[in-house]
Length: 123
Image (tube, helix red, strand yellow):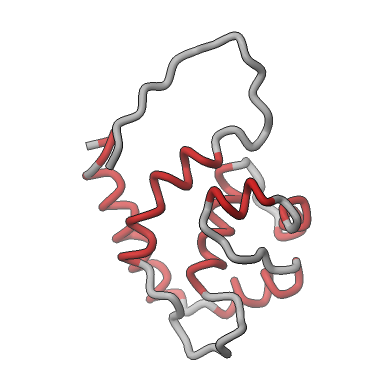
């Protein structure tokens, strides 16, 4: 994991300025720890991993409501930062989030959290 130096500057930060840092921290770990899909899916469907990364991205931006996903549907910066091929619509995002198996999702996120805290700039 790369080491980052964060320092203050005179430039103005926009609301998505932290997405790349969050995405970089998640990138390798999420690909290795979170399975592509927790349940069988169509080949053209948005993966369960992408649903989870979208939720993490929303939380990184201080967004907690399912409706907030529409703010990022066409945002290439958001998609690139979190390694998403596409962002689900609000109804799909809501249903797919509810359909994720809690036990497998929690185990995957717990492993991801543990690995992130034990490596890189945190550990």
